[in-house]
Image (tube, rainbow, N blue to C red):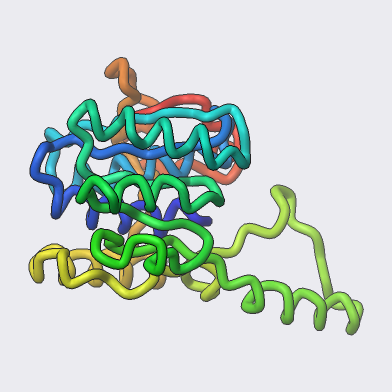
Length: 220
């Protein structure tokens, strides 16, 4: 459930943006990508309801040259915080050269942008793989309808250390929301949520289920 940490990353991005425009690169317009992009946007809107998120799909899972070029184009449009939902460090390097801020993914990417990296959404695969292998070995493993879907409460998804660039009030707000996510008291996809056309996609009081997450075709 990477979207949980992406919500917090969106909060961080909006808290430092001066232009009111943030950007995120994704691979393809499918549920597993869209839930991260949307959660990032929703988190940003929790800090600044008027924030604008520029979204670009590269139609590739790995294309450092294209990712760097897309980042340059975003920065030219006034984006001052760039997040990458892909594996390349090219966007962070490009943002760093231009004095912009960035959000990493999969690993702590701060070495690629030591001055501008706000935080990284990280995978901690040992937290999932070791207990899963143990359950398989003991014969206690059971499949889930939508596959394994661990998140922050399992320790599989986390944020790297928050940059000192993030204001204290935003850091406190991020910590508070993170605690609610871990305890199960908050879900980024609890309605009401509207898509970018203004249509209700999650009704008030409802929370998108796992099938709705995997099938997510809208952007907020």
